[in-house]
Structure formats: structure tokens, C-alpha cells
Length: 208
Image (tube, rainbow, N blue to C red; front, side):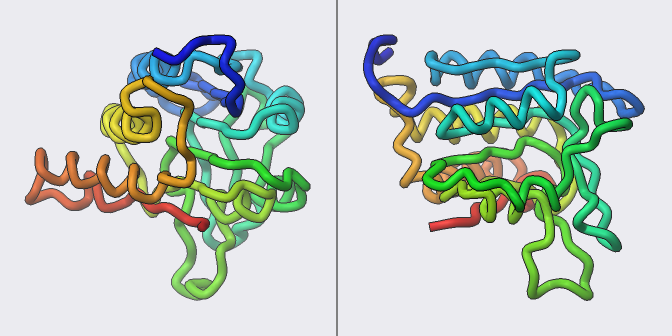
């Protein structure tokens, strides 16, 4: 494991397994533990502390973010699609607000949530979704999902993803390898479930 004092980009982890009005995400704790084991210099915001205000403030202080939570996608009004944080019912963090941020030079946003890149067939030529919003906000690489995913499956995908980026924790994440790291993770999942592409084909990388 690389030394804790070594200079490197800091990663924010947002974990919200029990969002109001949503089902429990039982795999989030295991996923977050796996990510933190590979990225020791992280800031964790979780549960009741994972509010819109707290997440927005923390995004401004970190080069990368990993979000393990629910997302709500409205394909008919994509600007209102949102992350299901602790206060999403009263103060939602929406696509419109994320896209308006100015976080230039940020490196990686990994959205471990359902349908963060889902769009209406009428808007196939536009990136009006949560994945696109993080890219517009200033993140060079964004990982999202085209349809609902299992939180257990997401945990496996991102464990392999970060293991590749860090050579199993040997060095800071090489975010320029994000696309290849996701490809590696998806191929591994495909090898386990070759006849069920709905499990692994949802994950996409955007950026350059």
C-alpha cells in the first residue's frame, strides 16, 4: 500500500444506503470498504451527513468522487434527475445544478447508482443525465450506468476498477486509465455471467 503521506489526488466517497423513500442498498457497506482499502486517502460522507450542502462543499475540495447511492432518473424532465441523498425529498441535488458547477480540472467521478446515463429515445443525441452533468461540471472521466444495476454487482465492478487504477493499492489512482479499467472490470463480470448481458453491459465511461 502506498504511503499515507504521499501527495496524490484526494477522493470523496458519498455513501447513502438508506435514502428516504427508497429501498435499502445492502451492498454499499462492502463496496465502500473495498474502495477505501484501495484508496486510503479518502473523505467519507455517509448516511444522515450525506446532504446536498455537504456533498456540494466536499466536491469543491476533492479531485475525484465515488458515489454509492440511489439515483432517480426522469427521462421526460432530465434536468430534474437527481442523486438520492439524505435530504433529496426537500432539497434535491439535480442534473441542472450539477451541470452548472465549475469544478475544472477534476479527474474522476464514479457513479455507483442506477440509470445515471439513461435518456429518453427522443434525446439520444444529448447528454442530459447525471453522468453527463458530472462531465459538464469539470470531471474528465465519469463512470455511469445506462439502466438499473445491482448494488452487489456494482461492488464487484468498482473493486476491480479501482484495483486496476491503483495496481491493487500499490500507487495512487491513475485516472487516465479509467476507460481501460472499466473495460477490465466489465470483462471480468461478463466472464462470470456470459449469458446475462443485462448484468454487466450497463456500465459506461465518458470523457477523454
